Length: 115
Image 1: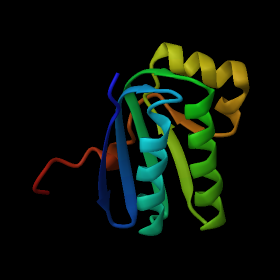
Image 2 (image 1 turned 30 degrees about the horizontal axis):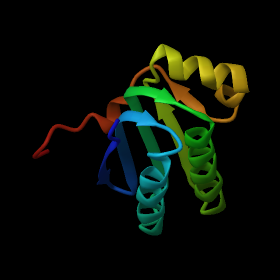
Image 3 (image 1 turned 90 degrees about the vertical axis):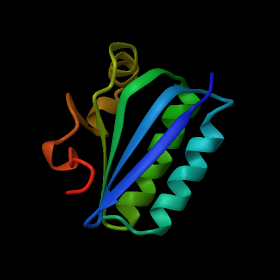
Image 4 (image 1 turned 45 degrees about the vertical axis):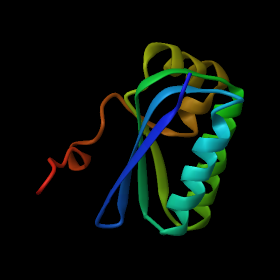
């Protein structure tokens, strides 16, 4: 399955919306997107996972790597709207205590186009 990643930045913050499955085959694409984004130096990144159907250990490692780099830059990386299957992976691995996990995308990121 194809992985789609779109990023919207505003005032030093970025919302990364991911659609599809994050696995061994699609993780490099996500890794490249995070590398590009983190070069811009945002202070806060929220990952909208509401459209992620599946995430394996490779995908979790990409997220952990991005979190580590964000912390090194003095920023934060948060996960929003994980579907039940992804939330379960976060819980089973203990990563729900490593990441800040939101049930929904924080309101400040729900900017309508043109505002």
